[in-house]
Image 1 (cartoon, rainbow, N blue to C red):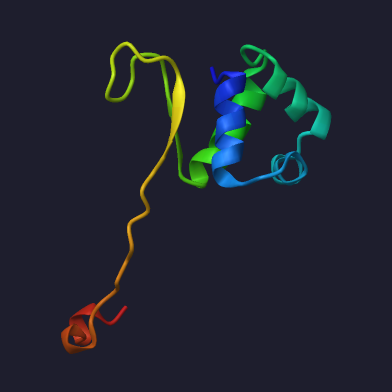
Image 2: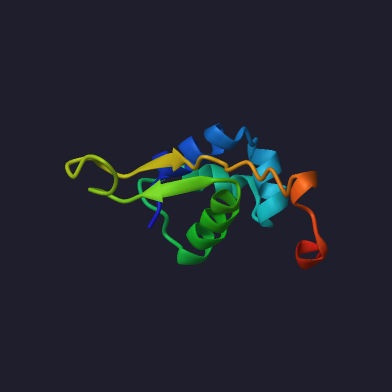
Length: 98
C-alpha cells in the first residue's frame, strides 16, 4: 500500500495539481485530498489507480527497506528517462526500414 507521504511526493515530483490528478484518475478532488491526509490508503482500488498513473510518469515507489538503504522507510524515486536517438542516417537500410 502507498502512504500519504508517497502520494504527496509523487504528485510534487510530477508537478501535478490535485485537480489534474482528479481529472486523469477519475477520482474526486476530495478523495485525493483525503488520501494525501491519511497514514495509509484504505482502498486498494484508489491506491492501484494512483500508482499506475504515477508509474506511467516515471515514479518508482519504494517500500520500507527497498533501495540503497535497507533501514530506509517507504519513499519515491524518479526514474531516469533514456533518450532514444533512433537510427543514424548512415545506418539506414532495407533491413531496418520498419
